[in-house]
Image (cartoon, rainbow, N blue to C red; front, side, top):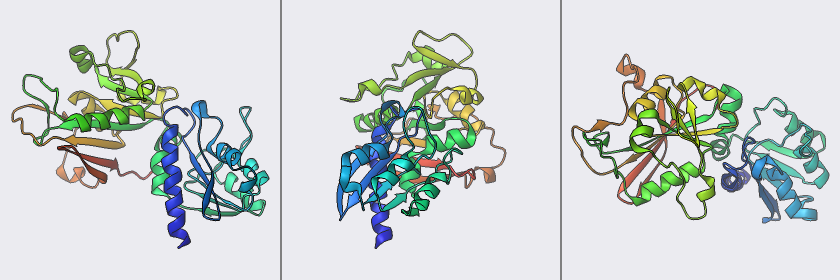
Length: 327
């Protein structure tokens, strides 16, 4: 019963963590909940600019009611001293919290294992889990530390026969309003958005967020090109250069079959968002160019589905890249 409750409350903390993206960058977006006698007495998520941390916000809200309570937090509490604020492990010890449930160990070597150890040394019961809900909210943090680059999502809006446009290049609109709104939500969760130089020159896309209340969360605009880019845009020379995108933890790829193929060929895509419309184009422009696949056998077991849902008349399928790096 306790395991089920822990999973439920960690999922709720992970939902809070969603509010931190992308404003918390370059810090990870973390969520925290404090429960006492089955009642939430404190909640928090990482604030804009990365401070205060989620635990500090939740403890401040809980006040004296944190004593003897259980803290659910999506990422291991930090253990290192910073000029920007105290270590969360120390704040938790001082609060009198009796138990801490951690959704994911922090891969940051400054904290990894040290935060949980400090809590245990203070007599706090610590439960470390492998929460998929927590991990999904911390993919950018894990990618940055394990791979030295942002977490990359490739978005494709396709017809049933895999086209992104007619043979003449008409692409507005493949999908309906509900799918486009979902895509804008995904933009709002990203630090940067990238299209190919051809898409930039042909469409001059806005790439902003046009959802009420989220307009200020439009991501930085980048183009994969060797040419010049307009004012307000930044240029990426090659997919490999994403490791130099300072403070970008979540990169959203939109637009261009060649750009999609170049990132897939370099194995730099971690997540696929496939918006599939119930239409047939026939002879249209394919969604992805050549990715250098040598044998059909090499295509299998590289992707696994994580989500599927109906968006109006369209279907969303979400896939994650199967990797061994623990991200």
